Amino acid sequence: MTKKRLTRLRTEMDKAGIDIYMMTLADYHMSEYVGDHFKEIEFISGFTGTNATMVVTHEEAGLWTDGRYFIQARQQMAGTTIRLYEEGTEGVPTVLEFLESHLSEGRTLGFDGRLFSFEWYEKVEQLCDEKKAFLKTDENLLDAFFTKRPPLPEKKVWVLKDEYSGRSVADKISDVREAMEKYGADAFLLTSLYDIAWLLNLRGDDIHCVPVFMSYIYLTADSCILYASGQAFDVPLKKYLYDNGVTLHAYDKIYTDLNSISEKRILIDPKVVNSELINELPSSVTLIRAENPTRLMKAVKNPVEISNTRKAHLEDGVAVTRFIYWLKHTIGKEEITEMSAADKLLEFRKAAPDFLDVSFDTISAYKENAALMHYEPGHDHEIELAPEGMLLVDSGGHYLNGTTDITRTIVLGPVSDKEKECFTRVLRSHLRLLTAHFPKGVCGANLDILARGPMWDLGLDYRCGSGHGVGHILNVHEGPNAFRWNPKNPDDLVPMVPGMITSDEPGLYFEGEFGIRTESELLVVPDQKTEYGQFYRFEDLTFAPIDLDAVIPEELTQYERKALNAYHADVYEAIAPLLPKEEAAWLKEATRAI
Image (cartoon, rainbow, N blue to C red; front, top):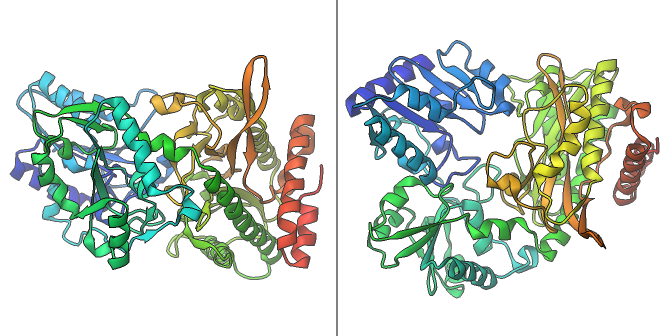
C-alpha cells in the first residue's frame, strides 16, 4: 500500500510541476498531537509516531524522527522503500541539509504552507533563493487521493470555570495586552490551540486526549476575534464569549480577514504561526517576532491551579496504586494482556469523581516492547503478560482539577540481575533530579546532568529529555520548561521558576530486551534564601509506589535511600486512607523503608 501511495504522490508531483514534496506531522497550529484529518504521514508511510517529517523526490523518500521513535519507525516502515533518518545521530543530515543537497537551479520544492511554521518557511525560502529554485506552498497534493481523509473536527466546547482555572478571561487578556504594549504591537495573532484554550478558559475535544478546539485569535487593544466553528458553540457559550468581549467568526475566515487588517505592527510567534497566514497579511505590515507571551503565563501555574493539581494527583495516585495492587495479585491467575492491563487502569481512573479523560494513550509495554519509548498496545498487536519480567506503564489523566503523567515499571515475577541493576540506576537518576536544590536563574539544561549522571558513569544514556512541562487540562507536553542537556532552542535556557510543573522521567532502553522508566511530576517551589540568593527545590506531586522488588538497596547512596524512604512515607500517608483495607495493608509493605 505504501509503495502504491508513493507512486500516486509522485504522479501528483508531476502534474503540479513539483520536484521535491515535503510533509510533516502537524496541523494548522503546529500542535504536537493532531487530529486524524492531519495524519498524512501515517497514510503514506504507516508510521504512527507523533513527530515526523517526510521528503519525497522522484527517486527516493525519507522520514525524519527523533530518538523516541527509532525502533518503532524501523519496524513500521520495514519493506516500504522509505529511508529512516535518525535525527540527532552522527552523520545523519537534517531535513534542511537534505534539501540543500537535492535542490538545484530551476527545480521546485512544494509543501502545504498551512502545515509548516513561518520560521521554517523563511529558512526554506532562503535556501530556494540561494539555489535559484522555486517554492510552491499553496497546494496539498494528498487531497487528490487521500479521499477518505476524516473531516476537520468541530466538537462542543465547554467552559473551565474560574474555580478551576484560577484567573478570569478579562485578567488574562489584560495581561496579554500589557505584553503587546511592551512589544509595541497593534495586534497579536495567536494560533496555538493550547494558548487559546488557556486564555479564554475554554476546553474542547478536537484532538484525541488534548482538550482543545480548532481556532485562531486576532487580538487588538480593543477587540478580540475568535475564529472557530460556530457548530462547536451553543447559545450559552456564545453569550459567554460576548460577555467576555470576544467576537466569534468562522474558522476559515481568518485567511480573508487578514488581507484587509488596518493594524501595522503584528506580534507573532514564527515557530507556531503557519506560513500561509503570514503570506495573507498586507505587505505594509511589520512583523514583531517573539514567543507567544501566553506561553510562559500558561506554564507558571497560579495558586488555584496548583491547589487543584494536587487534588488531581491524589485521585490519580489512588487509581495507579490500586492498579499495581490488582496487577501483582492477579498475574498468573487469569489472562492479562498489555491491552487489558491498560483497560483495567482506565477502569480505576474512571472511578475518580473528577476524571475527564486520559491525557494520552496508555503505554502498556511488556518486556522487549518497553524498549519502544512510545509503544502503544492494540488488540491486533499485544502480548500476554506472564508472572515474570516487568511491565512498563506510562499513563496519565485529565481531571477537572488538573492533568497527570506518571510512569511505573512493575515487577511481575523473577527478573534478571541486569534488569535489577538497570532499574536501580534509573531510580537513582530519578531521585537525584527530584532532590535538586538550585539557585534562581537555573534552567532545565543545567539540571539535566543530575538525572543522566548515574547513566553516563557507565557509558549509558537515553534518547530523549529527562522531563517536560505539563499543561493544566491541556497538552500533557508543555513548554518552555524541560530537562534537556543539549540546548537546541531558546526553550532549553528558560529558568525554572516557582509554579512550573515538569516531569522527572529518566529511563534505560535495550532493543529486543526490556525498557525501564520511572516518572513523577515535580513542582518548583521556593526554598531557602542565603547570601548567595534565592534557592528553589522540587515538590513531588505524584503519589504511587516505586517497585522495591527490583531495587538493589546496596547500590543506592545513603542520600538516595533517604530520599526514596521519604517519598514512600509520603505516598503511604497520602494514599493509604483512600484505599480499601487490604490494599492499604499491601501499600504499607510496598512503601517500607529500605
